Image 1: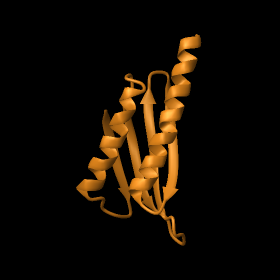
Image 2: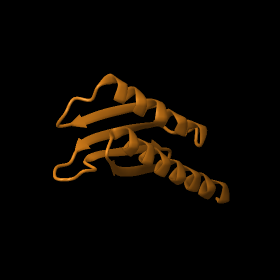
Image 3: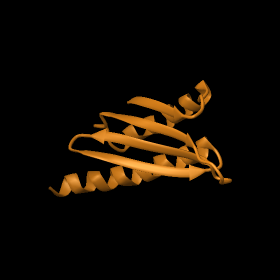
Image 4: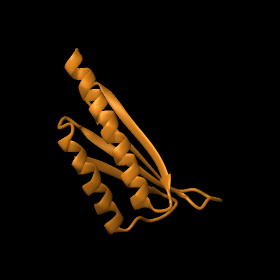
Length: 98
């Protein structure tokens, strides 16, 4: 899946970008018609859990979004990918009904 990655107010290293790409690629096993996606990584101020990851996925006829905050970008990515996995399963179930 083609992902556009945006790191806001910092430079993300290649290991983090590869980690996010690998995690989001696993979503293709749940729904293989994902067109593309965007990932926004941001540092929030005044909080211990200050790493925010937002993932937006484009799928035919809809768009899925997850925003998670954690102590590390890796943990936030895991939470966001899990939320998207649940959304994809729900979306797929609705497709079967129609």
